[in-house]
Amino acid sequence: MPDLKQEMADVAAAIDKMEKQAAAPTAPPALGKVRLRHPNTGDVQVVDAVPEAMIPLMGRGYQQVKE
Amino acid sequence: MPARVQQLVLGLGNNKQTAIGTAGATFLRFKKLDTTITTPKPVFENDAAEIGKGHEFITQTFPSHYDVANRLEKYASAEFTTWACAYGLGNVAVTGSSAPYTYTITPIDPGTTLELPYFSLVEQVPEGGGKAVDNLYVGCAIEDWTYQFNYGPGRASSKMTVNWVGTGQLTTPSGITVPALTTENNMLAASMSLSVNGVDYVATKRILSGSIGWKNNLLLNAGFYPGSGLQNGLQIRGRMEIGARVPTFQFTARLLSGSTEYNTLVAQTTGTATLSVNHDAGNSVSFSFPKMAFQVVENAEADGIVAVTVTGAPQYDTVSSTVMSVTTKCGIGTIAQ
Image (cartoon, rainbow over all chains, first blue to last red; front, top):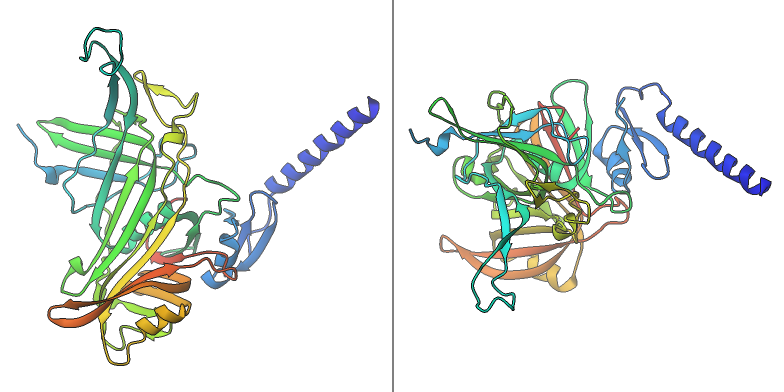
């Protein structure tokens, strides 16, 4: 039972860490760049703000991060 | 005193709603061509078919649900086409710190969401110092849009049509002050560039007409799920998810001796297809299919000139991870944001 409690605490801490990372303020991307984030994995990609670079990521579900 | 239909004030949601049931606060006022006024149609069922009454007639009615839907037919401006594609495809990125803003738009990835961004829509018809119609429809989504182009002069050469659906949630009176008409930059077909499977149909002066479309096939019945909500005792939708989406592309071009359409069909050759129209450098729309085969090629005629009508078969491209994308430029930077 203590193991289960510890495991649950670890999971809660991991979720909390992930949520804080997602909400953490970050510097806006450089001029001409755009930040795209996948809503499920949390992966963030900074790419040139041109359709050729953005579309392959947006097609896979990445969404623009509002700076 | 009756009202004329030209008095219709149409406001389309600018920023997307924060939730399906939360009305948007910003609107873009547009003119349109069709004369339809949306009806907040409550649907009732009855007991006519039920047995045990002694007859086949209605003795009782029962509230069922709200059915809200309508269409928007317009000359294709950069602003309205951006609005339609942004809400109709769903994944929208806006870049640029000042006008013109660049929109990069792709279909939503069903691995991340099945719901498009929702918008609010307001219709008002002033009459006799009040309003004959004043409805705010909350939680609307685009069922389909179609961009059409034709040879011939004027704005009619380039049109955009949208069919939208509502959850049924409405506020009457709306309480909305719709802003002044949006300044639209119409894109005539004469500005078009069109390249399909390596053929430049404008440079060869062959292109006559065509259309690009997108249909979401929204799962409307599934929106009435247990707990979806009631309004005046009638069900309203709590969600509108995409079904099997269908991109379409069709064009008619003059048929020449060296025309490759039939060979492209038989060989099932694939290539890119890009159609661009613009008003000026700051107001434009470009539809792009990364991988296009031909589904049907039929000989036709237009004004006595032999032509060919091609129905494309847009394919999902694993390199660009999409079946189509739309890139636009316009002076409004907040559409579907």
